[in-house]
Length: 343
Image 1 (cartoon, rainbow, N blue to C red):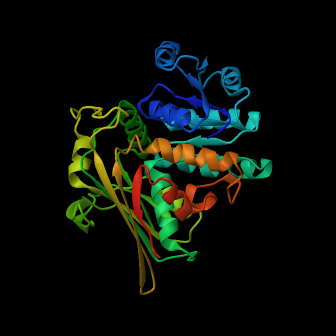
Image 2: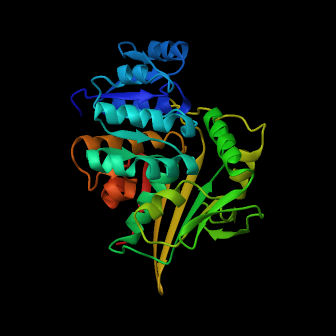
């Protein structure tokens, strides 16, 4: 248990933000509730009496500074991150505290890596974007599968979701990404991101049990195409999504996630199957769990715990796999996920 270290959660009243606040409390931290809507913050605070509320907006740097005053770190849970990431990172740099976000937006994460790398490194700051199910989790699994390899020919991350009921935040972030891409889709091939307008391929992916073989959409690119190449020489990084989940995400009438237990988790389950290949060798890592939004909270809080206790391997703008001991990190999540790692 921590001794009440304060962590500001920007976007605390959002779907994922609420999970993060609950996990911080469970792990002994003291969350400060922040975000743009003072009314929603007050309603959230009613659920957790005693927590401090500090409204802030990204177009008011002084309000962000107040929100971060005295905090040991900040977690940004407020999308679209194309709008929120840079202002909150700037505030974190001014406060000289670590920044972690849960961005799944490919372009927003790329902006963070390219726009803040030099300043963060020079300041000895820690900025970890995409510390979530998409981006951070996949990167940890790839890193664990790679082992001592520093390069590979290809990395494949297959997401086997039983379904995908998107939150309002997911829909808003997706709309921003589509606008930035001009209707094109993105893939990572030959060592770079490409924007194309063709139809993505479909294929069968041999998920391990209990899911088994399923039809997936290939080149269904997620934030892993930014995080993995940020620290590995892998010219081909491809992510896949079960067609049923992709269809629910695309459908405008798919409802938001519905809680089915006392932790607020939905009934969604997932299998993430990672394969890396180098020459004739192949390595695999598999993870199973429940609710892609809820599982982001232990990912974030475990990351914060390791950053604040000095269990890190890098500074600057860094992905989860680069800054943390990936196998140890994944095994620490055992109450929330099960993993099968090489060796």
